[in-house]
Image (cartoon, rainbow, N blue to C red; front, side, top):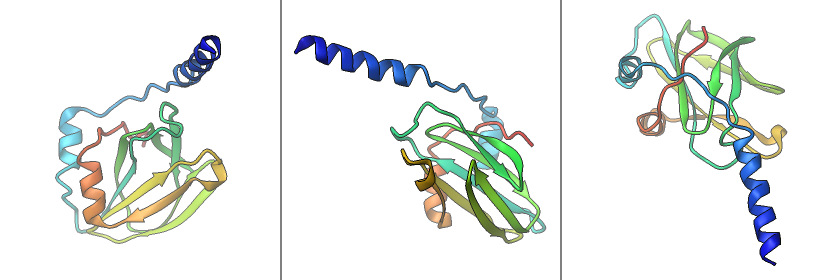
Length: 144
């Protein structure tokens, strides 16, 4: 019985350690600036975050905007980018979400991971909910 518990624990440990993705974080000043939530009248602010959790927690997830890799989210991180207002496409692998960003506004999207990749989704949340979540998370480097 002890051998089975040890084997199961070892397998779980190897699965989580073997899948660690190291993602560069923004500077403290860049993170603090994004958390002021200030907007520019002619641009839209896009916040994309992944709450801390167990599902795929150590695996980085490439997220794209309009076909360009925006950044890599690990569990408990967020991406911030000022974007031209209008229609855009958020994507991760085969998950595609058309979005509309309005000028002078903050837009918050949470990525809800799932063991079944097809069940993973982008969820737009209210500014209040988004601010509360992002305020607790570190910012990762945006790739463009």
